[in-house]
Image 1 (cartoon, rainbow, N blue to C red):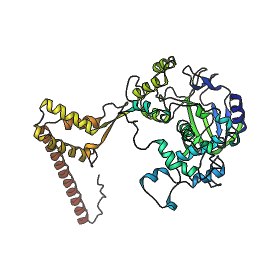
Image 2: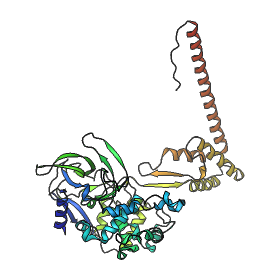
Image 3: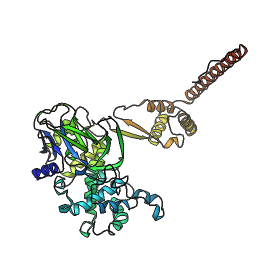
Image 4: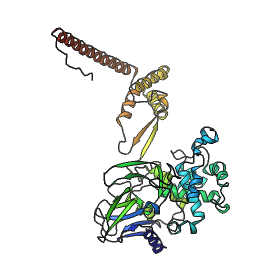
Length: 465
């Protein structure tokens, strides 16, 4: 399988450094890409032409003049172009001729679903052979396992994915039996494709190596052979690669010193020297553990925790998911610098009421009136939203666990009635002084204009700051 895939990629015009092992087995049973020889900073690791990827040109996938046209079968691209966009369907009923196509994610999922159903003739059979049998993506969690997420931001709500597929998607697929044979029209087939797109697809920027400019792609998703086999790290010190989508034609020097010209390709280079035996790591984005768990089915555990998990292959899958859910909710093993907690203002206000009552900070009969005045004060100063300030949320990040805004809000909320009145009076005095200073500055500017006019000279231009 490995040799056949590498040959397929070479036949497509791709390049894999001979110093890489794309199929290294980890102790945990997972897979990683490793350096088998020392790699120098700047060395070319992987080159994958866009035509070797699976991709829909979401701007206009039927336009043959597009810079990067769709790589799936043309008739499949046309079919997906004509479908309504599901996200709009629930919110508003539009006339049929105004309906938009499926979202990029759904379209890419259906594209992969159709290509998997006809793998032998799709031209991507060798690429499909590198896909894992399953992942721990939340799409694959049972209802019992999802209960572990109760009380977290990942707790499910709204319609189920299966209901959306059966009600909104399946009827459209049945209109194209040539693209979606009956054998693939199951929720399991859809979930398998959605799982692969969610855990492996890339949102990309387009880089121009000649000008050095970078342009954000719209909603383009790419399934990129070989590059999608790299694992993620949230730690910049652990990551050692950079990835770019290059749409210009450039000459690339390969590891053996040879030169080849490429156009419209994905380029992955070494960001630093990589010793033999080290894992090649990339970033899937600045994501918190909860986002990683939701999208990819894992959390970015510190090395010690990862080693412990790898040595515990005997533990059940359910037990691993329970640990992942706990860690994503803020349990032991916290290390991801992008982790955050959303603190509800209602929770904060409840805590303020409890502490204020216990400390007798103000009379109980004045509590609600005083808190309402404080919320209004905080919203006027931009610390809370103007509308419904008691229903907002505050973000507390791992990098700033005690942000200044939170400290200021708590300080104001915990003031006694006298302290709050003193604060308001101080603000009023400050505003009064500022107004007086502005009036004095305006008067001085007016006097200067009059004096200049009397002398017959143009006045100097003034700048209001």
